[in-house]
Structure formats: structure tokens, C-alpha cells
Picture 1 (cartoon, rainbow, N blue to C red):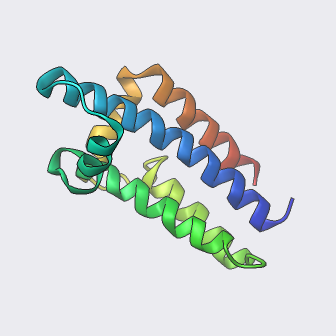
Picture 2: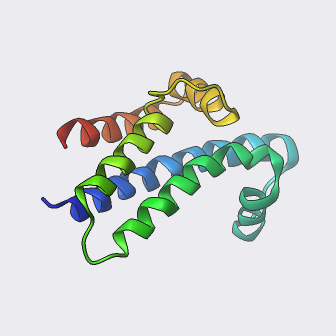
Length: 127
């Protein structure tokens, strides 16, 4: 499998993780404020401070998507994307940010988030 195909697989796994995190954030928001429709959720994801922690993962996915838009992906670009993913998703850097704090908590409390995390770990270890 070439670097581009591996990145496509990685971004697909990141999307599944992102969706699980959005589901949890939405559930928590709706418990306090009531039901939101898809349009309202999009507004919350892009503008509401309570959803801001998710933007780091969104930015990583966008960055990887931009790489896969090219005809080929260099080994260096692939390696960089993997390192960024390790730092953010596998918490390799252990930097404390709103994202890492929330994500660490969800890894312990949300089985579906932990399952997606494990899938990303497998992809990164298989490279």
C-alpha cells in the first residue's frame, strides 16, 4: 500500500473517531440545553466554545485531506502526518490542551471512543 492509500485509511479512521467524539459532545450539550438539529450542531462545532476542543482533531483531518488531494504523497509528508496523529490522538506529546484533557477522560469513560482510538493505533503501528 502506498503512502496516499495509507493516509486515506488513516483519515477514514480519524473521521470515525471524530464522529464518536461529536456524538459524545452533542449528547452532553443536549443533556443541559435540549435537543439540537444538524444545522445547529454544525454551528456549535464551528463557533461554540464548548466544542472548541474538537477543532484540533478537525484541523488534523483537514491537513491530511489536503495531502491526499495530491497525485502522490511523499514519504516525508506521510511520516509527518503520522507523527502529528500520534501526538494528537495517541497523546504521544502529552501536552496538556483542552483537547487532550477531554480526550483522555473520554478514553476512560466512552468504550466507542476507546475502540476507535485502538483502530488508529493499529494503523499507525502497521505502517
